Each structure stands twice: as structure tokens, then as C-alpha cells.
View 1: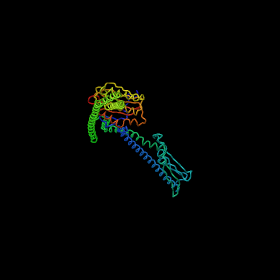
View 2: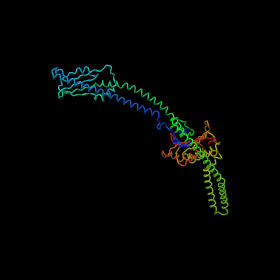
View 3: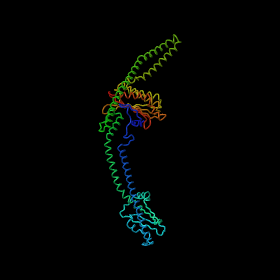
View 4: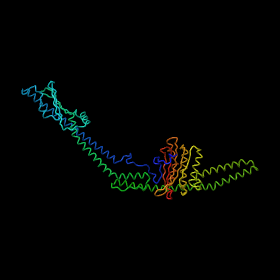
Length: 489
């Protein structure tokens, strides 16, 4: 039973009845435990990165387009140069032995890392020329060179057919060394990377600051909702500068005021109603005890006298007298059971704690060792009002009955103590068992129906809180807390 001594009430499937029982649960910042400020910053950061990738892609496209144009221009220049040489050869001012001759182009037109190749009809006259790389080229990362060479460089080459007097003499192709093009592209976008990283970081910081300042009223609203969910009906929101948020504040404050008023009226009504019910039960119990019980006792005594007299004078009446005596005894037993249900006499005669001990002992007798019921009462509670004592007794009675019917527990413990806060004294009452139901839904069924409604009504009348549900370590727990001062209990 030690594992159930101090059970965590927050882990219950809660059923609360307090000054504000109409609101339960707790609101997270965004419903999924995500901070709204960080959500906005993440989305803006994603937009910034999307813009960065779009800009980087555009820069790569422009670099590739420029390289392709340079290859195409070189192919045109080489073609014109060779056509001019063929013309000179035809006129006899040049020799076929020197064909193809593009030294002028290779010396002045080739860009760093660019190559030009001629494939003629005669393979012996094929020729290619390449220029070297500049010494100040920036070495790109390996992953960038691999990406550029695989996806872009193959599409940058230029080509042109060499024709003279309508006959094809060969083909001219131009291309860039993959290292040269990737190096030039990296040179173009590497400053963009650093600048973009700086801008994204600055944008995230500025966005967070701006959003944080803008959403401070939302934090106040969220705090107010959480306090309202915890039952604090005195919470109020401050006025805000924004008209929309200020309207929310006005509606929230008006709602909490109305809710506080309605809850107070409901608690007062429940208090009066349940107190009147207990008073009526006490009145009926007293009337039954004073009138019916005494008359039944008289009938039983008279039947006994008739039986004794009939044994000598009218033996045939002994059986009827004995039956009449038995009926009076059974009626007296049923009346005592009804009186206990209406108003246990121990509450008025012996006090609350003694009545609870008698109730626990009664359950132990009925359980016959299958379940051990026990009670711990740290303080005396004789100063409680008579109606308050009756409410507590009824709550414990209902809880023990539920445990006996559904729990299949080895132990059931009742604990009752008193503690003080800065305002008033409070009574804490708990009923804990280590049992299990026949089905996982039985624990929930134990707190449904008229039993729970009756408990809630009594706890509301006590201006207290009711929390009940399965325990994390197994079993079931019921916790009630209410003020013991005259304002409450």
C-alpha cells in the first residue's frame, strides 16, 4: 500500500468540481506544444533559404549560359578562320599542308580552360587546342565540382560544321574544362553564400525580436486561459493596444466575471440543496427512530407477552405470537438499515472519524479478508458542521462501495488530514485502492452515473475539488479537498 500513499493527482483522468468546474485541461502554446514565435521564425527562415537557393540556381544558370555562349562564339570564329584559309588555299596564297591553321584564335580568342577541336574528312588533319587555367582560380569544393561536372558542364559545349562551296569539310567543337567552369561558377556564387548566411541569420534574429514583441499580448492571453483552465475565475486580462486583442480581453474578462458569478450561485444553490437534503434525512431518521422504532419495539414486547401467556391458556396462539414477534424483529432490522442510510447515528453521537471507522469496519466484515479496508485520520474533525460531516461520510461511503464492487483490490485505504495555507484551513480526503477491474474500462465506469453526480454535488456544496481516476502505478484513487473554515465547509 505504500506505493499508493502519495499518488500524483495530475496523472488522473480528472473529474474536477471546484469554483470553476466548467473549464478543464491546460492549453499549450500552439495546441501541439510548439512556440508560435519559433514557428514563424522557422517559416521565414525556410522562405529565406528558398530565396537563397533560387538565387544560387539563377547564378549557376547565368554562369552556364555565359560559358555556352563563349563556346558557340569560339566555334563560329574558328569556322570563319578555317573557311578563310580554304579560300586562300584555293587562290594559291596558302598551302593545304598548313590546314587547319587557327593559331590566331588559339592565341587570342581562347578563354582560360577552353578547348577547340576540328574533326575533318581526313583524320590526319584533325587538330585540337586548349588554353591553360589561370593561377588565381578559386578551387571549388569537391561536391560542387562533382555536381557541376555531372549536371551542367556536359551542356555547355558549342559546335559548327565547316563547309566550303557547299561541301562539308569537317566539324568544329568547343568546350570548357569541367574544373574551369566549376571554378568560375563557384567564384560567382561563393560571395553569395556568405552574404546569404549573414542575411538569413540577421533576418531570423530581427524576425524573432519583432514577433516576440508582437506576440507578448498572446502570451498574456495564453497565461489567462491556463489559469482559467485550472479553475482560477478571478483571472483578468489587461487592455491591449491592438483593437482585436483588446476586444478579446474585454470578452474574456466579461466571460470570467459571468462564469465566476454563475459558479458561485451554482455552488451556493448546491450547498443549500444538499444541506436541505441532509437536514430532511436527519429529520426523517429522527421521526422514524422516535415513532416507528418505539412502536415496533412495543409490538415486539407485546408479541412476547402474548406468546408467554398463550403457552398456558391458549397453546394454539403460540405460533401466531411467535410469527408476530419475528415480523416485528425483521421490521426493526430493516428500519435500522434505513436509518443508517438516511443518517448514521454515529455522526451525531460519536463524530465523523468514529463514524468513518465504523463504516470501514463494516466493509471489512463484509469482505471477510478478501480486501483489507483501513483508515488514517491525522486530526480530529469534530469542529466541522454537521452537514459537512454528513457530506464527507457519504463521499467515503460511495467510494468504498465502488471499491468493494469493482476494484478486486487487496487493500483500500482512506486518508483524511488537515493543512493550512495563507488564507484558510483545508481538509484533504483520499480513498486509494490497489485493485484492477475486470476490463480496462471498469475504472472509468466506477466514477460514472449517479455515484459521481452525487459526489460532485456534495463537493460543490463544500466549495471543494474532486479528482478521481486510475493511478500510474495501478489501482484507483479519489481525492477531495475543501475548506474547513466556516466560509466553506
